[in-house]
Image 1 (spheres, one colour):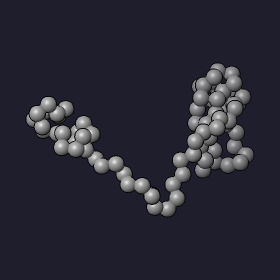
Image 2 (tube, rainbow, N blue to C red):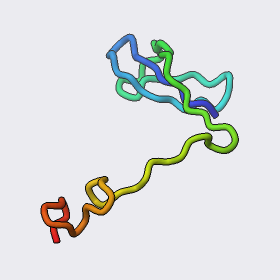
Image 3 (cartoon, one colour):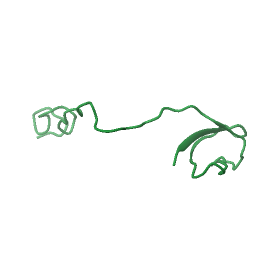
Length: 76
């Protein structure tokens, strides 16, 4: 079930629409107009195992070992 991004030609609003079938028509979520232009958007597709390592998680500030240290964002 693809999600498409549209811009309304009537009011200018941009919205994402879940399209369930080929025959389904989209409408603006703001004004209800069917005068929409499909926008080009980046796809986020994952296939198989990730080939990257997730970043190392840090303390509450994002810096490893920062929590509880003097001057750290969490104090201690």
